[in-house]
Length: 160
Image (cartoon, rainbow, N blue to C red; front, side, top):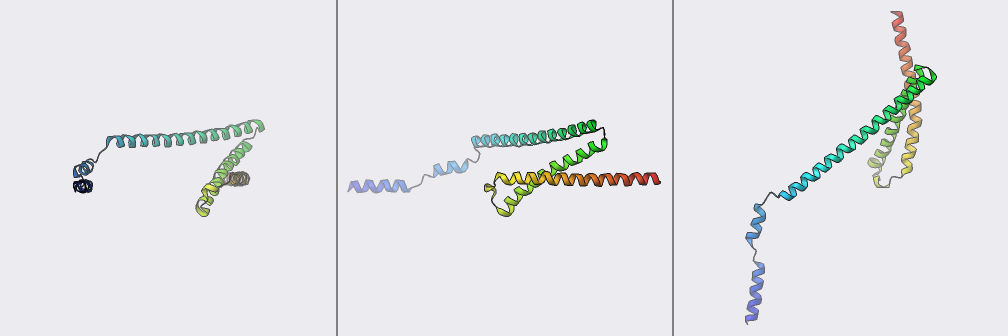
């Protein structure tokens, strides 16, 4: 009989909850270890974002310097300021169209197709080629518009 009593006593002991153990966790709202881990992860995230922005800006500066240097070499080689300006317009148009075509391809797969994980690299090659072709044609068109606008403004200046 004592064996059953001890067994039932141990069951009753396990069914009872220790309220001091629960109250200790309810009263402690601030944990410095988790706070330090959170601060460290936020600092690392901020450094990563700032580093990524810095790398993108550095890349953009290098592209812009390259475009200006090629147009300067074109101007000096051909001894024509018009051809140098035309090369600047066409090169900026090519770079912007490559960016826009690749962004359009990414958004097409991300928004309309929902297949962002299954994008093939060949699609970005195709969009880059399309961006180059569109960039050349739109650059020539914009240069033509700028040239006609300048001729029109010169004619207004001569007539007045």
